[in-house]
Image (cartoon, rainbow, N blue to C red; front, side):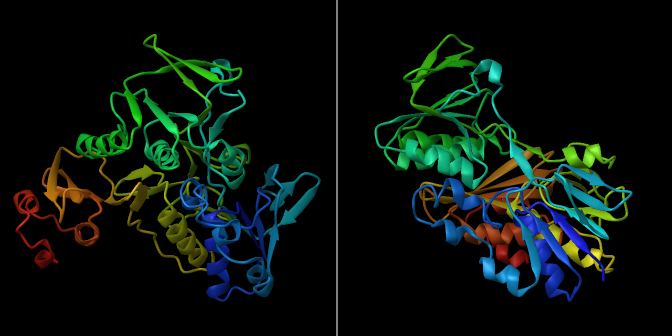
Length: 400
């Protein structure tokens, strides 16, 4: 029987194990989780879970009994210390888990502020795991002061939750504007206005110098200004967990490099999810999304069992802030034009990204209809006339 080990118990790891059984694999499956919990959803952590609208058990992707019923061995709370490629073993301290095929679904970790500038002070948090959110949850009390470092989606989502709970919220972004790396100025303008309408103090183009601690945290900024806070949340991006792969001699480049079928430079080892760097439209990328973690993991499961089919990503993402649901289809890399399409009301609109007339991506704010149309057009490789997109009276659905 083929023994399959899966290193990493996040969304991709769980999806891969579940798909292997669904496809009829009857050999041993071992899922190695570094955290104490069974695999769980991450997106609700900084939203519904932190707001108390979702319990810990509701976060779990499957109940514990599911893994027993499907003969999936789950090792929790233990971190792998190495991969012995020659002996085909995953090392966990003094123990070794043998495999015939190994899947790396090790995910990613939150970037932390350097200790040299106060990143290790009590009250400085990141948002990545259940343990992270459990540590910061007691801080969210009305009237307390929260400083968010980083104006990407993680930082903005944390700011929205804090503001909804009645905290005094400040957000600082070193780049000239929020969402600099991931969205157009038009989308940044929309969310800046939204947050300021909820009382969030947004400071852009201001770098963090250092933090000092005591009864409160004092943030010293590069422009000479200061900000006092009771706690700090850092949302400055994530890095792929590829250290074990690197140490094992696998090809890595800002993630574990895989081919279109998810295979690494070792034919017995595969990778999926945030940790994997995969081919997409002639370039190598990492896709940091739940959707990709699931879809790629399921494709890898099939290929581990011999299907031999390339995985073609269909990127989509979402973010919830206050009463706004942002839905994103496609990747906007290389866009040269953004067209705004009005929605059904003032809070509803979509931003369409083009490059040389080709539709690349759509940001839709409280506009699920235009999101779905844009997503289907992108996946079909069809690009509408930008003038039609800008005309709210045009029927884009007819283009499908």
